[in-house]
Image (cartoon, rainbow, N blue to C red; front, side, top):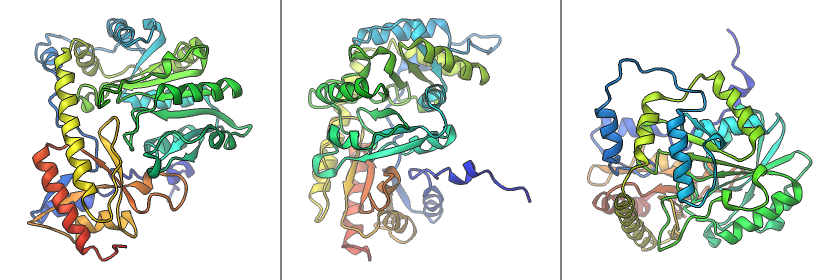
Length: 398
C-alpha cells in the first residue's frame, strides 16, 4: 500500500472541528447541541450582497483575472482608503478566503525551514498553513492573567534566530478577542525594522471592536511599507463565510508579483463570491452599528455569566467574538469530548473548542477553552447554564 506523505502526517487536525463526529452523534441521540466552538456568525448577510446574487443575469460564470475582478479591487482599495489605509488597487489580490491569502504570503515571502514568530494562543490554522509551506511557527506565550496582551518585546527578541523571517499577529485576535493597540504595533514596528522581518497582519475582524475602541492597522505603520503583508476576508465582516473571498494586501510590489504567480496557478478566485464581496462594500453604516451593539450585548452577558461560575475566569474581549476561558478541569480536550459523549442537561449540551489546539508549546491550554459568542443571547443563556451544570459533575474537575 502506498504511504502517506510526511507533510500529510504532520498536518494537524482542526481543534475547532475535530470533535464534530461526537456532536453529530449527540444530535442523532436527540440532544440539542449549542455550538460555541466555531466562529460562524448568525448575523444576516447584508441585503446588498444577497440582492447582487439574486439579480444576476449572467449567461456564463467565467474566469476572472487571477488577481480578482478589477472593478472589485478598485472598489476594495477605496474601502481601505476610507479606513486610513492608502493603497492602490494594484496593491491587492483577491483570494479564496483569507486562508489562501496566508498561504500565498507564506509561499511568496518564506523558504522551507524559515521561522515565523507569533504570540500564542493563535489561530490554529496557522499551523496547517505553515506545514503546507514548509515553514515553522515559533510561539511566544501571552497569558490569560494579562488578558493575552502582546508579550514583551524582549520575549519576542529571545525567539529570533538566523531562520526568523517574520512575525504574524491577528488583531482583533482569534482566539482571544484581544485588540492590539497602536502602541503595541509601534513596538512591533521597531523589531521588524531592527531585524528586517516581514510583519504579517491578519485583520479579518477589524469591524468587531468594542467599548469605543478603534482598530489600528499594521498598514498604517510608517517606514516599513515593504515589510507589511495584510490578510483580510469578507467572511466575518459581512457574515459571508461561505462565499470564500479574502484579500492579500501589501505595498511590496515584489510580493504582489510573486503571489500573483501562485494565484495564476490556481486560475482565479470564486466568481460568485467576488460579486457578493464587491456589492457588500455598499453595506450601509447602520448595519455595522447594529452588529456591534448585538455582539457587545452577547459579550457582556457571556463574560458576566462565566465569571459567576465557581473556578471559571473569562477576560473581557476587546474585539472579534471569541474568548479563551479558564476552566477548573484537568484536561479541556477530555472535557469537551465528555460534554458531547456523556453529558446532557435537559437533553441539551454544548460544544466548545479545547484551547490546547491554539497553543504550540506542549502542555499549555489544558485548562482553557475557546468560546465563540456567536449565538443569540437566549441561546447563550441556555449554553452558560448547561456549562455551569456540567462543571458541577465533571469527574475531572480540579
